[in-house]
Length: 181
Image 1 (spheres, rainbow, N blue to C red):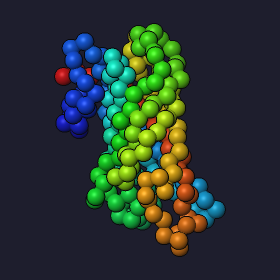
Image 2 (tube, helix red, strand yellow):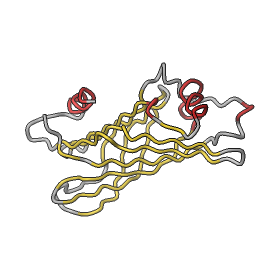
Image 3 (tube, rainbow, N blue to C red):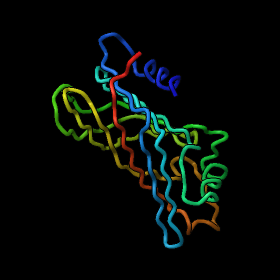
Image 4 (cartoon, rainbow, N blue to C red):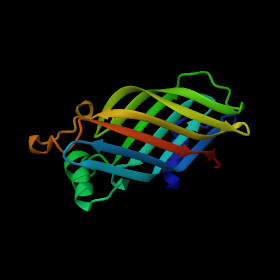
């Protein structure tokens, strides 16, 4: 875990003046609702790094970290759909579009503009979210967005088409702390 955080610090541009924040135990959740069956999974090991100087944000999630209520669903997710052996991580590499005073407390609507990489397919995205700043520092970031499976070349066999939604709602939640070398 520490090595991932250090890599993120390098990716988002570490300098002595930069204000770096990291979330080491972020939550990512998705829910596929269909008339046949609901599929839901959560991970609490997503990692997110935020550089308030250049507004860069990087998220990385180990695909096998998602936990399902049913072991067979988890197996199918990893082996047949996400192909976790080939595509170990999903990620977001983005910047915050809005000009935010990261030292001013408040709840800010933000737009993340960047690349979402799922199943080895990179898609340019704009994702709406919220950033909470308390005591002059980011403490929480959250977002809800949809992932269209076809955009990431995730194939659903026709036999299972009624069991899996074509568009999956995703929500993420990160609690930040100041990055310490």
